[in-house]
Image 1 (tube, rainbow, N blue to C red):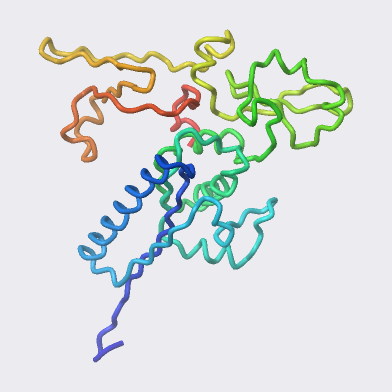
Image 2 (image 1 turned 180 degrees about the vertical axis):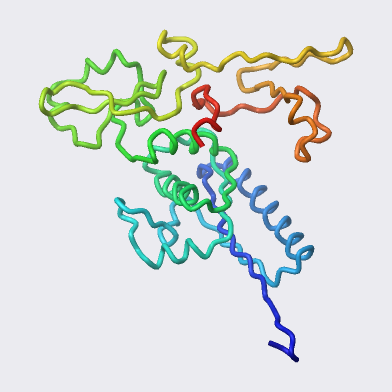
Length: 281
């Protein structure tokens, strides 16, 4: 209190996480992301009379002191309190990281925490994959034994040597990349049992090599009729996708000025299954 007036000091605490790969392109992408974050919060601080912005920058492997999740190794009460004091979490991730990979386990735990307490979180690049995985598995963690963690054809599950099967642990699974289904060994019968689905599938494998995978291909949706003057947009390569804006979103403030159809880069090799995320949110 100062001269009979109550003073309030607003301090924003934001955690910014680098989820990019340690490559030159990855470092360059994160550099741009980091610079934009600093600019945006400097403007927010000025426009909203915020006393101070505390922006904490971490890599995806330096998150231990913010992680708290029962049933995992992250059970420190201090970490829980530190996480609760965050106002916002911003993540810039590589679009091809897989949420079950050991290298991004901490990132997946952090996202799961944010979802459980409705903490404000923004994820660039790997967001849709993490959402699909978390809703499908509740961010369960296991070790994929085939394809260097990326899975493989379902029919190869029967080619695994018996001595390797005998050494499998309870968290070892076989992943079918065309469907996202994963299987664990049932010790009572030594047979493979379905354990769940990742919510993701390898788009190319599903399209080209597997009948079952066709169930998970993107659904062709109705596209509004364009005027004669409107240019028809086609992707020029497999790394491009066409975005179509439906009428109800054309006037949204974030989309103003965009054409009804436009192309975007599509660098991800794994897609979420073609379901409406709002159905499971």
